[in-house]
Length: 422
Ligand code: HAM
Image 1 (tube, protein in one colour):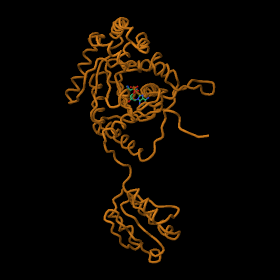
Image 2: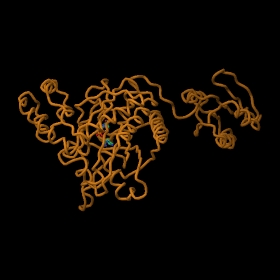
Image 3: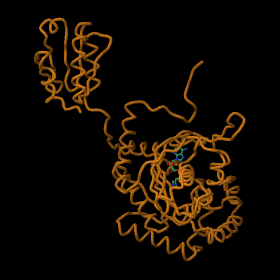
Image 4: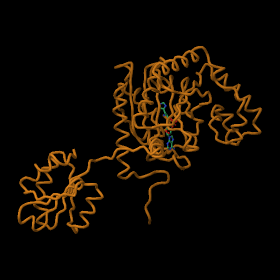
């Protein structure tokens, strides 16, 4: 029996984990500056939470959820996204009673049973943000400004921020009816998927990548002609606030979003490098969701970034990401006696926040030196029988290749100033 990871789910090994740590710590630093704090919710939720919030007829709920019956009692789902769990927690803990504004971010795995391909996985990770309790367009703009700040800080270039308003419960039905009417007139040119979307969720046809569908949609009505006054004002407010903060964006009235809880502002960060999987980030406003999930009437806006897609893009543009640890001091120890003598020195150096590496099993000097090279060691401390007898070590500076003898008693002090590995 060969044991392998589940299809579409991936292991993450060093040194790649270092890039994730960098992304995660940048997230904490940037989002912290805007007054957001981390929230952690369980990976498993009760299934009806997603059916109610994401929507019964969405692709996500219809075919992509990992749901199981827990001991024959209750349907549980591996979370496919983070907004519904965060809102559930917000309502469950009556957060609104303590503070009218709640500003959260999260980092974690999400699960969707999609057809795996490059940039699309069954377990993937999101960096998400939810800003609850603010209905003003300044809140939408602040979320977007923070997103752009983060993407710039990690070094992402050549992406487009596209912004739209998908209307509200008042004005969208009129638009959907008009769009449906149009789609019926071109139904013969649409793919099977789009013909299905046309009935259930007509705005989703704009996401279709088929050329023939794109061509058929050239003259399709777009949402801005149907906005009610409030939606129109809100959108102008968001754009003005973005302009005032120097954010570059494109207005794309065809952004639809695949989850039902959205209203008004919808935005995406897209790239053209990856072909079909071109969305790095998606987000928008979801006033009404808190109430739908049993809470008070509360506004909400947020976004989520796909971490795998972000890293893939950074790699494609050859963005150098930091490595996790500083170069170590490597102890090449020959014989049991040398290893024993080195133990207190290892402890003292580590107590001084130096990164120290050694070999537990005492392989040959050659293989230990090879490992020191591979680990990019700044210094190698060599202790063999001779050195042990004289109670001194040979210290080799790997950059200059200089090697000097240092008494055991002075070794820690000697290395203190040298290798700055903290
Ligand atoms: P979403 O557009 O479904 O939105 O997902 C956000 C991002 O997650 C996508 O833009 C993409 O980068 C990444 N993503 C989605 N599915 C996959 C997959 N199968 N493999 C790899 N990456 C993927 C949401 O999830 C909303 N909860 C965002 C939000 C937060 N809206 C308001 N607040």
